[in-house]
Length: 397
Image 1 (cartoon, rainbow, N blue to C red):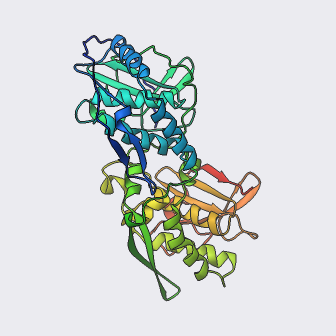
Image 2: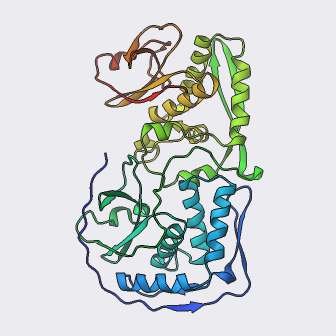
């Protein structure tokens, strides 16, 4: 559940700036299939000692803005456009570039200032706050984001991008002071929506075997999955269900799974095909709740669910939604109970138990094991008398 944080700020310290120029040095961010390469000799490092206050951040900005960082910023934006990177993926690139210029372990404040500067010069409205020896980095965002702090400044919501770095040390009290520095052209909202996944190098993929039994036949799949997915979603926050459900697969993983699923169900009618996908999602993966699996609530994207050996109802609902949308593109709803989420699918004719929503009937399709052999249109006994809400409605265009 999202909480509101109000901050009154105080802090004073001293910084020392020196410019240490590099020799000719190309640095490679080898994360995407095509690496991002930049010339470190054109990005002289600004050395910082001590903690941070507004006056010294302003000095940092004036110093770095007078140096020749224009080429780097132009290259970053060109790479973003060329690879069609969404904001979250672009921020992962900026993080790695900042790490290459100013290692996080050497000086966390300086590393954060580089991220702040590069995001602002890329057009995003990113802000800083300081207090209690910490530097807080947040960005304008209008979306419904949970499980991370957010600030309201001039009626605009700003979500915290470095909350995870402080964890329990993050102050939920009035200790941070906003840094009142506005950078010209930094006006864009930041979005957590991921409409397209990046391409990774072929060698980053490994083959994972999964299988399940459907009508006395065992189906096996050798899908290709990349460990780079874990890095992308390591600090990804709790987004709303529409954003979460519509995170796609990478092209390599997609091609290793979807054509095979389509082949397996090509001779089935729609009901049987959806039933096949429901049971694939239900039985091809072991169940484990997030507390046991991760020690915290964590929603997995469809590709993460394919990668992990264990997953819960949130994860399976998202994967089932993706598969049905991709193969049949049927109207669907996500049905949230107090302790469970399941799916409803609209068929040509209603099947079994159905929920009426927006004038249409959706038959229950349970993608998570329930201790009962549930068919389409059947609800687990423990949820029959529970209240629910519809948290996402997908209507094909």
